[in-house]
Image 1 (cartoon, one colour):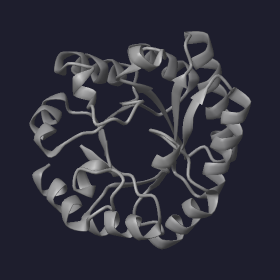
Image 2 (spheres, rainbow, N blue to C red; image 1 turned 90 degrees about the vertical axis):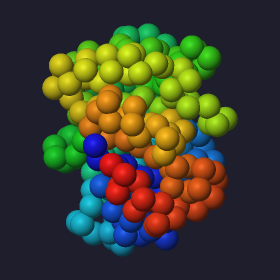
Image 3 (cartoon, rainbow, N blue to C red; image 1 turned 180 degrees about the horizontal axis):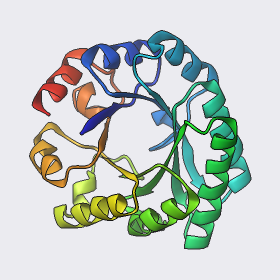
Length: 232
């Protein structure tokens, strides 16, 4: 499993990098689960890390606005993100999801075909009235994205494991692999979740709060990233 750590600024990004994170994922938790940060923050992180680790960037928890989302995705790619992540927060149908992801993918890969698009659904999709993540592997494959993930839409301390069972997450990640895509799991993951994560075996785990001492509003601590990498 690769470890994706989500810093909010250059200082946190350096701590994540020194701790051994595999992917540095720039986000802004103040704007939601996959809240977008500013282009200059993505650029500063890219300049600080260089080519040592891939940079990821979130572009937001989106409702059905394919044009707006495509522009945001292109902005993240231009700013230096190798992975561009979009959350389908208020996208409710398969047709809407396909149009969103197809256009986001085109915006990014017309600019640079080597960049990767990450489509995120939400484990708590029922309480936010969003599309089921179980539909996303097939939709993502058709749209041409590279990674399908699941996160929690509402950050209230409840984990993905409270909304999806181990069996469901195994089925989810297996479906993603069957479509030839990479799988990613996130959503208030904790150190004590590592045994079950090893059984599920996603390609990527996305974390922030775990390496901030349990509080995602605190700062990333290098020693906690090191601890996580050591346990994996």
